[in-house]
Amino acid sequence: MTTLTHRSRRTEGRKGAGEEDTAADRDPTEEDPDDSKDIRLTLMEEVLLLGLKDKEGYTSFWNDCISSGLRGGILIELAFRGRIRLEPLSMRKKRLLERKVLLKSDAPTGDVLLDETLRHIKATEAAETVQTWIELLTGETWNPFKLQYQLRNVRERVAKALVEKGILTTEKQNFLLFDMTTHPVSNGTEKQRLVRRLQESVLERWVKDPLRMERRTLALLVLAHSSDVLENVFASLADDKYDVAMNRTKDLLEMDPEVEAAKGRATEMVWAVLAAFNKS
Image 1 (cartoon, rainbow, N blue to C red):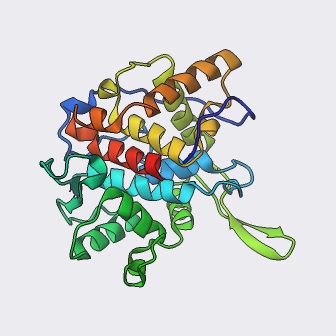
Image 2: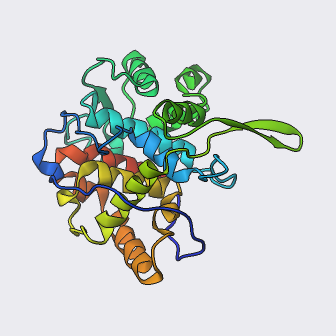
């Protein structure tokens, strides 16, 4: 599990759109409108974009959290698009981590990773929990019969999707003994817009109550923290604003997922993913 820390380094960032809707007021099966005025990005693409070094085109070699963070993003994205949901509360299964992920619709999304995950969820004979699905999709299972559910080369596949959308480019770099494919940022405007949106969500547009936050912004804050890329979001801020942003995000992420999920079904999967990362 990642932790929120005080400022240690500075990176790039700026500009974006804010949030308007209250998450609880929206049909949890309804797809979200575009976050960006120009290009629609999935949560996985946004997380990877936040984690990439702009010029170098790769994530930190020390970041071992982003793989599971991307898988958590896949589950949240599928829930937001009305394809999966958590099973209803019952007397025996009240907690988020006890409730299984159920298939709501197997209609293709048009995204390769999302559709591959949908096929896996549809193919399982017994439903699994959010935490188990994150582990299966990451390949962290001791059951050889469930290794088939691992999503492979996720970072590279997400990066290629960003290349197709004109946000990244592809290069080959030599690292002494081997060549590595990298994906430097070619369209800095989209990343700046994304960073700015998150900064504004905890500064100018801070609402204290997660129920009033735009749900994709809430999800991205959770995923950025879980993927250990949150520092990249706030590093460009002045020290006083940085401290405010980090402290407010810390307060948000330390809220009880069980309590917050009970306030509105639209963000149940977000809080379930956070609960899974809190336990890991």
